Length: 325
Image (cartoon, rainbow, N blue to C red; front, side, top):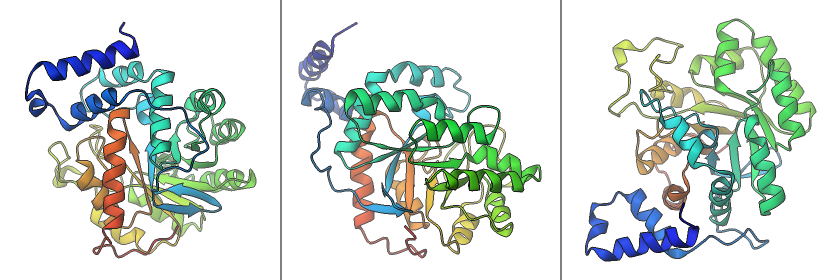
C-alpha cells in the first residue's frame, strides 16, 4: 500500500504526465487531486475556524451545514448497488474519518450527526486527534429508544433525536406516547432533544399529539431526479420500497414546516447523491430549512462548504419560512 507521501506524489506525477488530463476528470476527482497536491491537513488547533453561518438549537450553536454520518456507518442508500455500503466503510478508516472531520472543522462546519455505533470513532477523534466537533446522535441502537439514548448521552452526544425510521414506525403503530416519553427522557439529560421523520405524516401526528421537540429532523429534496419513484406509484404516509426516495411530497412538506416554530434540520437533501449540491442545498434552504445535514466524503467537503456559504449569502429571496434557529 502506498504511503500518504507516495500517494500524493503519484497523483501529482500522473496529473502532470499528460497535458489536459484534468479535462476528463469529474469535479470530485479534480478536488481530490488538488487536496493531495496541497499536502496533509494540519492537526486541529485552537484557532478560530473559517466563517460559516451559524444557528442555535437551545444553547447549542450549530453550523448551518452539518456533516452526515451515514457514510461512516455504511448506510449508503445506493439503490441496487449492493457493494457500495461495504466500499464506503472500507474507505472510512479511523484516520480517514479524522481527516474528514478535521477539514470540516477548519472550514467552519462544527457538527456531525450520526448513529450511536459511531461513538467510538467520534471519541477517538476528540481524544487522540484534538477534534472539537459537536455530535448529534440519532439514538438508533439497542433494543429500545431509552437504551440508544443512554449510550448516546454516556458517549458525549451534544444533542439527541429519535431517528426518522423509528419515529415513522412508532406513529404508524399508534405508539406516539412512547415517542413523547423518549423525548422527555432526552431533555432530562440536559441536552436538546429532537424528533426525526421521513414521512410528513409523522411530523403532523406528533404536532397534533402535543409533542414539543427542541428541533425537527425532516427529509427534504425535490423529486426531479432520474430514479425518483413516479408520482402515481407513491403511497401516502409511506416511503417507496426501493430505497430511492426519502421525501415523496416536498411541496406539502415545505408548506407544513413553514408553520412550525422550532428549528428544522433537513436531511437527505441530495436524495443520497442523486441531486447536485448546488441544486439540493438551494432547494432546502429556500424551502425553509434552518440547517442541512449532508453526508460528505473528504474530497467533497470543501466544495460543499463553498456552495452552502454562497447560497446562504445570496439572500434566498424565495424563502418564506423565517429562520427559527
